[in-house]
Image (cartoon, rainbow over all chains, first blue to last red; front, side, top):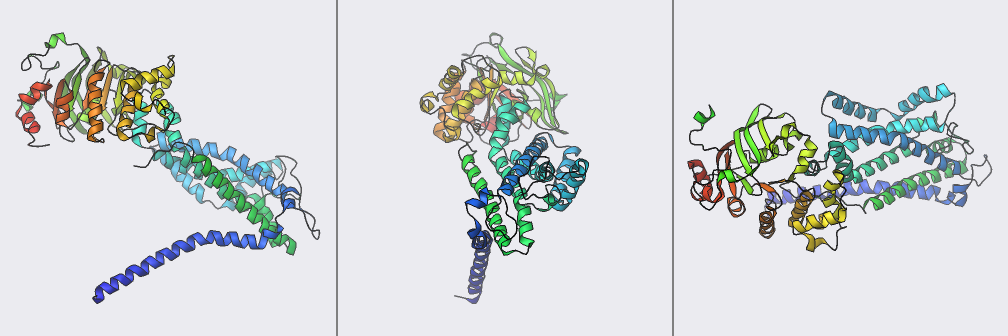
Length: 283
Length: 276
């Protein structure tokens, strides 16, 4: 074997090894985090954790039921507010956009996506908390919903764009109006991608802490209503992790594990449901 | 002006019948479903059709042939105004359907009367049944859907192959079956004219043969206009053939005449394979 060929083989093998290693590192981060959470928080997860309220310092036992329900309420209301706006805006961009307005909307959405979440929090604080003089679930949901808009909007646009032109023309050739074509052919053809994008947006904001600190605030007890402060898992993790108590630290790890677990479950279930529909084969 | 630019062109609004094919009916005896007169077409400032005029005989198959980029697809897409989906597309001239100008009609009603099948099979991501029923639902039909769907699938010779799994995804069908499904979908709304834009170019020879056979049978139901770059196909299935070159209609005659005694040297050059 001549030296040149040997060198080329060496470079080829070296690069193959490097890319493989990096791929393994990328995947193993998730499992490392999961393992770390299980190691530190696994022992604190029991039935009480899901059903009981937090206990005062020094008293063992207790759970985070209020934070789990609080997070669920925040995400529900945030989706009700953010998803329709993002989705319909995305439909507009993909199907009717083309002029200056569409360009501005697209650009603004990208900028909004890059706004730090703490700034979104301050904004929600000024707009919702101050006028009502109350930290509340609504205010927290407003902040999270704002963050969901650009993600949903841009991904809806992209998935609608990916629907083959032939389908569009096929529907219009049968006398379907443009709106009818969008509602009965294009959106159904793209819905898997769109739903996946919405779930990713949901998973992204589920872990947001900064915008909740001064909107939903926090609560040691059950939140009495949508207009009152509420506990949430991320804020609970933050509070417990910086507290000087050993028991709270363990509970913070457990809360992190639960949060990650819930997000994973939502993802897996949603993918399962989506797999049942009719998909367009890639050609 | 155009005549001086194209001295050898023979353009007739009615098919040029009688001179070559004695077996054909006289032109006056043939009713015309559509009449295309002096159509000029532009994408932005680029003109792609030049002063095209031809008549489409009722319940006959008219084939549009010509090399790639000659404007045959553009021409067929003017007939149901599908060109309007393209920005900056502009049409001049007049296209009549049953004596009425299609440009003055409601476009969704027009497309109900002038159906279209595309180059690549494009079933919707729905079941076989829902694909065929789509046009009926869009047009708010009062007919019983199941009967209408069965009728269309029988017309497109697909019924026996799919009757036991109408609720399966349309994508489980083969390419040829998908194309016949698209024909059934177009036939379901009972169009007067069926446009086909190279319907067999993505199919294997056996599927192609089935579709060709089908088209010949469908003549009794509607008027058929098909674009093809396959000259043998045009010769096999069509009654009239129009030859286009660089956006101009070079020759329009009964098919046997165009392929045996072409009236223009460019037609002859094309059908004998000297270019294209």
